[in-house]
Length: 256
Length: 337
Image 1 (cartoon, each protein chain N blue to C red):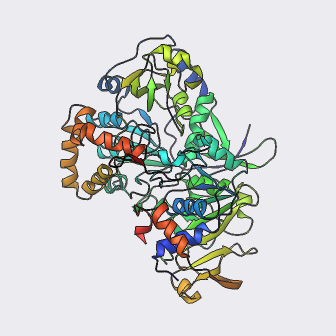
Image 2 (image 1 turned 45 degrees about the vertical axis):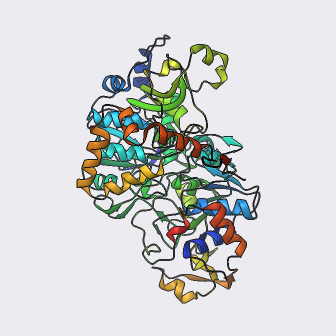
Image 3 (image 1 turned 90 degrees about the vertical axis):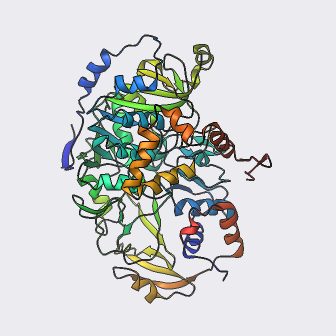
């Protein structure tokens, strides 16, 4: 396996999940790098949408913001927020790709506060478009480092909905049928969700890590998929494209 | 009539009554009048202490940065601010402690550049009353206002703590019985939108993504347009399909070249990442940040003074090359895709 840092490993593993021809609403940071890598590797017809209005840009330089001019460079359309979010709400967007400060076993995401909302230990940015994407898109992908401070028993605040408190809860709350968390990609593993309980389960582990490593860096008990596989390691080509074409300035991958 | 199932606990800062908004718009002038004025005068005349203020663009993209500076320089206070897609705009207004109430969709973060230390300190200080929303929730609130109705439904925010801390309601659809989140219309007292071109009457157009500015322009009671260039009304009439904001929404037109700096203005200049880093670095130590503010905002007469301190036209030309992805040395395109 070629040498790479944890962020590179995460971004590459995440990029492979997006299939050619799918549509994805992309958030800022690592999800952006993963979507861009997917577009350059195996999914040239990936319909990438940004909440500010960019649709299907040719990303020859990494957008620094999901609303900067690179987010609609040679794009098919420079639209607006309502059009993008309403395409999601109408059911035309397959994936959303998000980050988040905290995640729980049902895939609920917190990007609002650490601690109590009234007197927070740390005030964070809030939802942005994350709650909207997580409510509307068919499948939620999350990319975040494997860390017990991030994978917590109870998030301080549910900013964006995962499966809330379990099976049937999304539909009961009024969220669209058959939507919800799909995969979580970390530097150690790829996790999905158990069909019955809607709890997070380990499905694929990156080379040189074990289930115990993943569990030790997670604040709640993880389920195991029936067959846990080894994640195919990053290829030289993926790393080269990531480093030279996707993020040569190191905005994302230097944080690994 | 919707059956209301639940109510968020957050404060509703503005009255969502459509008839009150109509009464305001009834007396708003429709005539083609020359509205060109210095930005200083526009802010003095149209931004009042205690107003609900919205800033167009997306964080540091096509954002009226010059207007944010002027609001801080004129020490406007007790504003209510829509933290909608806000990054550098929130950072500037937090530095001025210009607002004490805020509808949050996204604040403090400067996207992948990191969190603003000073905006975070101010937001955690207890000096600001907050209400939680999302980007699309606030977009729907502007859209409802633009439509002239008092609310719109959405299938977002449901089931989350974001709802609990919002001022939204949850209601049942009278047609299907399904549950929807209901978002109250929001008519801001004043908004500022930065565009590429406007005529003297305020017929305005921009390039690229609209973000939420078409809805925001129509929702706002008063609207200040800052533009890169004034153009003749003949040019507007030559391409009426390009007009995005009609003059009767607009109260002031201010020609402010590079008025989105250090943010990105599509086709004009890319963001000045070095200068945005300087903001973040300076903010780490409050004493250093005070000096920074004294030098860059309070110590200059207007935005031209700021641009000079930041490298003037030489720096702008570098950012122009970066926007067009041209290597200035080789004159080659940096875009090979």
